[in-house]
Image (tube, one colour):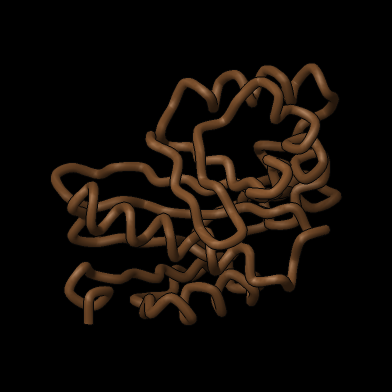
Length: 176
């Protein structure tokens, strides 16, 4: 993928050198949907950064001024013209509008360059920050999946199922 620059950010492919910054937020994932990506040590982070560097589906979000990785985006194509999208950011950079800036740039890229017709995202019911982000970007809530998926188990090993919302936006809605 060609790098995308915004006012404060650079969206680019991952590099091996991103391991330390990736470890900073994946050693303790905040959103339950990222629990399976938890990294135990820097060696695991190096392997993950290397794996992500081989794919355009994973996009590093970096500060333009320092090239510091502060989060990541994903966009998984579903032919012929749909993408599943998502994001994960380091909590140390929350509240500054970086996620909105990055995701807006990704959406513009997917709609204009990749000619996407539809983008959608799954958001857990308790993840209000991501719900607000979806709504700021003009996505509409299409549905609520009750007890849709489990990312964790209780003390007895029983899966804890979460309600998940689906948000989506069409190119014609984005352009309007």
